[in-house]
Image (cartoon, rainbow, N blue to C red; front, side, top):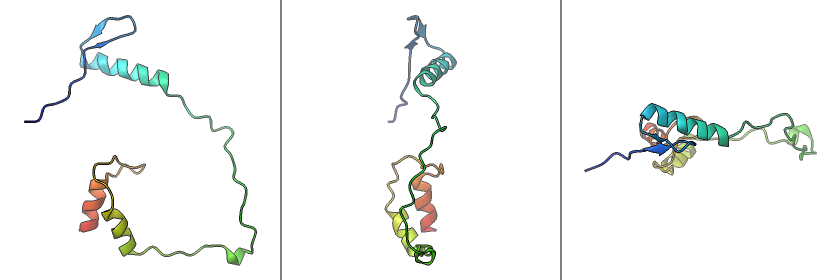
Length: 98
């Protein structure tokens, strides 16, 4: 039989016990906001151009086949979290099989 993991009760900064789920969420949120900061994007590094050949020698064409994509998707671990696209590996694998 599966059991749900529970959080709480918590203690706030003043040492008071928090049992209300809404108050626990607010407490967690206050903690995370105090720890994580926004990135400073005012001075983003611009990489040096490493290619010094002729424009016609640049790698502009490459081929990605359906078979290559299917092979890569088949290797995904379903227990991993979604990527930046918010698509879960489990969903991607199931769609690949269709």
